[in-house]
Length: 194
Image (cartoon, rainbow, N blue to C red; front, side, top):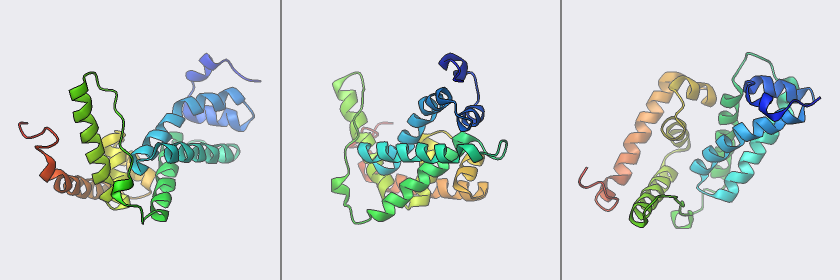
């Protein structure tokens, strides 16, 4: 028997997954509403392509549905599992498309208030996406999860299946590499007077 959607919103991700594993369709819809945007956002930031990110997020959610009946309560957070699967799928796709040049990377749209702010934000986002694309996959994954998704180092360590010290090292190296890649463009991107 399906529960009302409002009642679902009060349940934890893990409780919803267990309910879905037992056949509750409303629990699945609640999880998609919560975790689908997270998977898309991470995929888009790693891949830079909206269509690919949508496909990848859908694939991550399908994998979640497949493991739902066997989910072992208390072993991992569902959100951490989604981050891990999404970043792993994105890394696999990036490995397969290694020959794609930076000129083919799509530009990121922005919803800024004024035209000038919109142009500056767009240029900054495009520059960041291009710089992120030049990082090694593991550094990019750590930087995206830490600085763009806001996960803590222990959460990233769990998602990437590495130690916290390794996360700290990857994010520090990734930030340094991004700074070096973007250093010559500071003035152009409107950071010259900061």
